[in-house]
Amino acid sequence: MVELEKSKLVEENGIVEAAIAIEGIIREFKCDGLKGIEDLVSHIKEFNKSEGCKVIAIGSAKHGVYESDFGWGKPKKSDVVHVTISSVFTLCDSKDDNGGVEIGLTLERNQIENFNSIMKEHVRSIVGCD
Image (cartoon, rainbow, N blue to C red):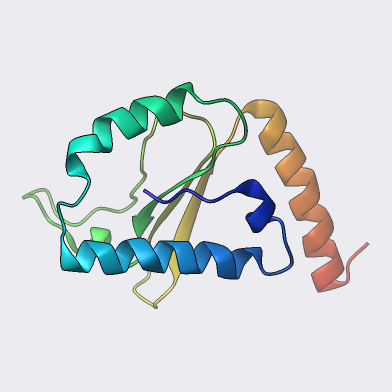
């Protein structure tokens, strides 16, 4: 779990700040994979109670979810379900096995409508369509 102040994320190099914070946690995990595990449940409870903007990123493009086979064959579609909070990004490898990444997004209805309108506007500006 990585925490970072919103003020650092919205700065010009916010993505770099996030990457540095995540890298620090990964380095700690490599040294001691169970460090802080005793506090995990309390951290999650506290996170769910806290107010403000919360976004969760779940998954990895390196798990090979489309390669798993539990006796029914390989999956045709993989989704991550997370019901405790509405702002969730999910990541997994592409089912097309071309090195791509599938990104899922869970938002409340009004948030997804805003997201869709912003996304359409950006796609139009990139593609050059009116």
